[in-house]
Length: 77
Length: 461
Ligand SMILES: [Zn+2]
Image 1 (spheres, helix red, strand yellow):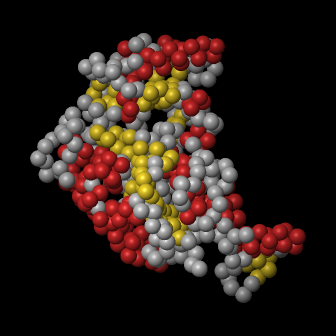
Image 2 (cartoon, chains in turn blue, cyan):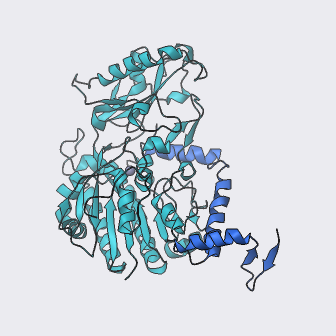
């Protein structure tokens, strides 16, 4: 994928098919996202978070610690 | 016209009997919301427990659909391996997910379970299942640093079940003060359309101090310096709410909710002791002191069923082909389960009194089942008796909880208040279901609730 540099170092652009862009442009109107970019950023963030989900949430040590707390709170025994 | 805004004030475990009946006159700000709003009881989900209740509320999906039946679940029908409920396991869309898709901004604080944080259009601070402050507990990650600048070390929860009650109270107020300081900061300094927070402190104070104020409690201690501990905390919350009301934009609609109620605990019923007594559970050796079942030497080849403790009991059957050493033939499963369910329903109290126990078969109760539900869900005596899973007590009944001092249990009905500054509802009393909260919030934000939400918009909103 080609990347084009924009003016700010904090942002970069990616190329997507124009037809897709046009579809998103229509979609943006139904939302309060200010632009296709902000909508796409939101979609990508969700995608990346989904990938993270495959990992274990708690380490073994953390899990023991949480269980201890939940026991003290009466939620589990 | 200005964009609609909603602030949801979550008071974990606030029961109608305290908030609306016993304490309301001492809570001027909440009282004014009640008198000008719609208010009433809110029927929580089954089970009425913090997890799944807040997520049932936030998604308008029942626990079966969510596949969340409590704080822990078995891993692949293992006898001992469990997983702890967390935000990643929530696959249904929450109100803030729906708002994010619409480009509306949300700020979400302390809703269980929201650890580990997931993205939204806005800001999220996770809840009390966050392992430590060293973890990433915000979305976006940069927010964490900002929080620490505002309140220092943020407090998710207080260490609990301590007999040092003064210390507990001090920690409780410190936590609450920090939470509200942060809430006020975010209300003022960030853009939001939807703001929701849960204060867990109310649940904690009720568990720790119920026996000091309720003469009906079997361990009631009159004339205690803690008699007003619960009331004082409600007053503190009311004052905090007053400050929030001062700083939010005038058009903000306000929803006050709890996830379930609370009431005095009558005691703990040792489910595994009972199962041993009835021949359902066999140990190789009965322990000499209190231990958890997972630490005990269970003779699985001779065990038909075992149970978990908590505010309700979860019962598991040892089924051939499903459990590692299962002995119940699949074709006998239903008969064994029916017989056990009937016996459990007929368990009597320590003095032979009848208990109002309810036993549920998950797949008959929920319209859809995901995850691994227990074989039976048991609510002893309308939840007045909690379930203790530990063994070694040499009795079925305990006057106190098996994992430390605790005075209260959960109850089925929480509360709700809906206040709209643009229209006076005049203190109309309407009882609602926990599933109704999410669609109602969306309606308040002038967004049509998705058709798959299970609840309905509260009448008049
Ligand atoms: Zn709760």
